Length: 295
Image 1 (cartoon, helix red, strand yellow):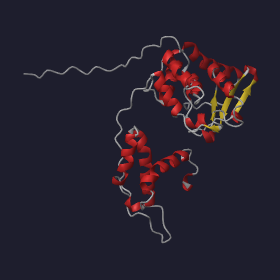
Image 2 (image 1 turned 30 degrees about the horizontal axis):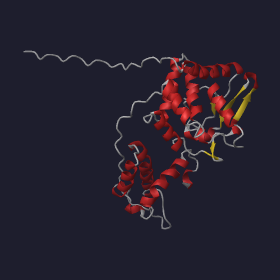
Image 3 (image 1 turned 90 degrees about the vertical axis):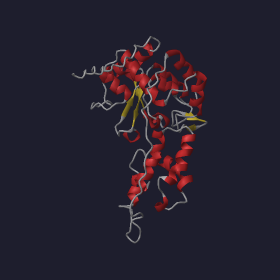
Image 4 (image 1 turned 60 degrees about the vertical axis):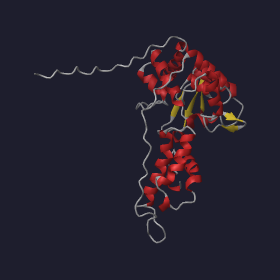
């Protein structure tokens, strides 16, 4: 942890180590191998965790053991391990097809979880990451008086790719933020006076059940937003900016006219959200017909 203070994923490392601690805390490094991790794997599987989620802490264990063999030296200038054991990750099956939230069930879900965490904001704009939502601060809000609105400029240190992130708000997102304004001096989204720590919390889980959307995952919200942007006729460049995709453009330096265009694009998603969305067609190339064997 001390050697990786520069990583933005340091908090995730700490979480993985906390999960592993009950299973590995009493073991010397030389005793850690794939078999000793079996109880941890089985416990996480019983909790319903997917292979991808379980592989994250397993990968961290493998990294620690790899570092203990060639690089980490003790007072006698010897490595902690002669050779690192092989930590095999779980096999990841094909990812599930993203689920798109439709008008009525989407509204039911978000109305159920209102005030539990900012799903309504994400419902308006499905592309903020956990760190960006949970740690959103009022100090990052920038007023745009020319457009009678405001935007958020998230520092690069808080963004996964290290670049400053411009977040514009459509009418729904703006109304939700205004409704929680004044609840906390520093953080936008709080629960019982403290900033929220996770989006996938009990409020979200219960809201999904009540709305009959238990299959909807966090990342499905981003897919939904992207599809609705495209269906609303939003340009590729504006979709990149709204989804936070790297584009090579300096997206935190907009003129008032350019900013107005991006905000209008975000609002067009709301205007088209209740219309029938275009059918998504999977195009597959037909397999060539078998060639009959010659006599």
